Image 1 (tube, rainbow, N blue to C red):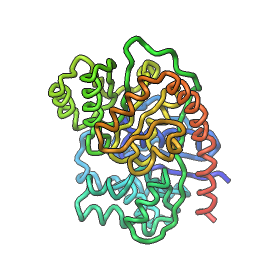
Image 2: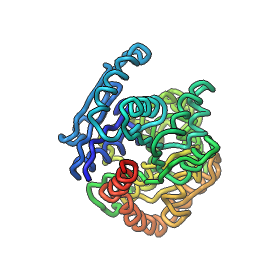
Image 3: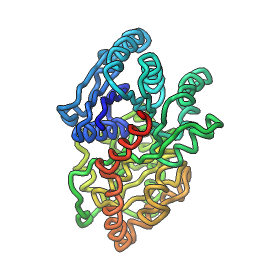
Image 4: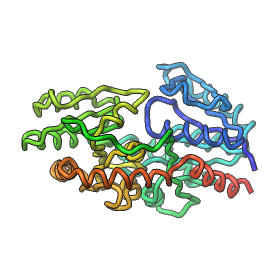
Length: 364
């Protein structure tokens, strides 16, 4: 059965959750569903990636104060929701709250898509009031799709009750599978994500890099992404004296060049939902070092089978993991080949079928 599905998104600025929303929406549209992307803000870092079959609705102009536009967002969302069968809150916070409100008013199915460890996320992002407001709807939403078992456990622990959930890994768009090319003379270690130390832990990565440089292990560190902690990270680079070996190029629309040139990918996060950047790196044949943080990396890497897991929140552990891969070419080649096989489990059509099962279950 084909459905009319509307995805509610705050905006489409550069981020992992935004990219996977686009990938799933595109795949469902190709599979014959009527798909709408409803954006609170007219901000899109991926203007050419949305399938032309998808209807795009934007409400507020960039930099418009959200509190002044709430009524307009709700009014337009109610208008759109009545024309759809399923309302999907694609991110935590306002999008899930408004999706639930619109679905209840219009008597539609509501699905929440949870991408992160909600306990840790809410501790960092929300005060007590918003923690209550933003988590309350999960008790009554028809079904919550969690991107990993760890995310599901966090949600159930936060609510302290059983609710209707389903674990579906995120889809990964892969244009082609290709084994990693030979290493360059100076190895490149790559990190990708928002420049937010409380979540992504790039401060640990820079310190681990500095430790290895001081120990005589020559390599370069490149961290791709943008965020509020850029100045803090730049100051840390200067403090550690690694200005000549660290690069922070900012957000880039086409990251292929960075993946193609990298020898090792490092995820240094303090916590994750799933960790799509791990899968992106693996799809380019790059061996991965990842912190064994709450939810995500361990499930993707199946322990240490497809990559090197290290203790979270530890500069020494992260440095040791990076050193291990930099010094062992055979291990890098082995993980590269294994990674290319593992990412096939996240192909969009395979994941879209699981979402269709959820649609069928909730629309009975």
